Amino acid sequence: MNMLRLDVSDHVAVVTIDNPPVNAQPPEFMTEIMEKFDSFSDRDDVRAVILTGTGKMFSAGAELKKRPGPDAPPGTMWGRMRLAREAMYSIMECKKPVIAAINGPAIGAGFGLAAVCDILVASDNSYLSLPEIDVGLMGGARHAMRLFPHSLVSLMVLTGYRVPAEELYRLGITVACPTLEGLMPYCMDLAHNIAAKSPIAIGLAKDALVTVGNLSIRDGYRYEQSNTVRLSKTEDAVEARTAVLEKRAPVFKGR
Image (tube, rainbow, N blue to C red; front, side):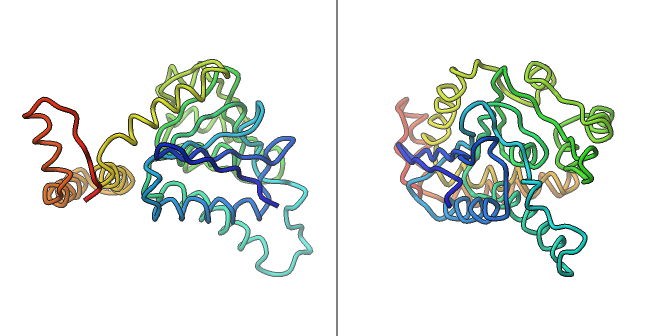
């Protein structure tokens, strides 16, 4: 059963979570996520990706009915946790920028899917939450720490607090708070903006964004500069400079 719908047009891939009624994430879903996002890294026809959900729910998170119980074979829970981690990393490490078009509640592992995207946009009916404390699990505190201040992360993890869309936008967690109807048009415009740029430059820029957060300022800046050197030797970099000087739109070839 496919739980993801894919549409690719004009270098933009739209991945829609389609597992009604709440877009829950069983193990098969995690595998499908990895396959899709790993493939985007090798596809020249994809330069930007949008991840969204069907209806008015982004994702309610892990499917509790399929959670391994205490009588599961040894190692089952460890394997499930590893699968969830790798699914998240496949989005974060995808070589193409990923926009989270959060069309409704993003709960637990649903929050995790949104948090690992490069740019977050949440419609005004949505919220983010980590309710695992109430269902016998631990949540994605580490991903939350990349986005939220310390006290708010603690509030989310310890109480299950729901952060509404307006607060997400006020805090700068999301870049916009459109209506549900305006969400996809906004995200498509943003994706087309990215897709129009040099795919080499975009790939190196995302690589730097993902990498430097784990480095010191000195080492991180050095890493960015090394990517600048790599980019400067490409045809696209020459075309970008020439287009600026000639006051025309650049024509990038991905070389």
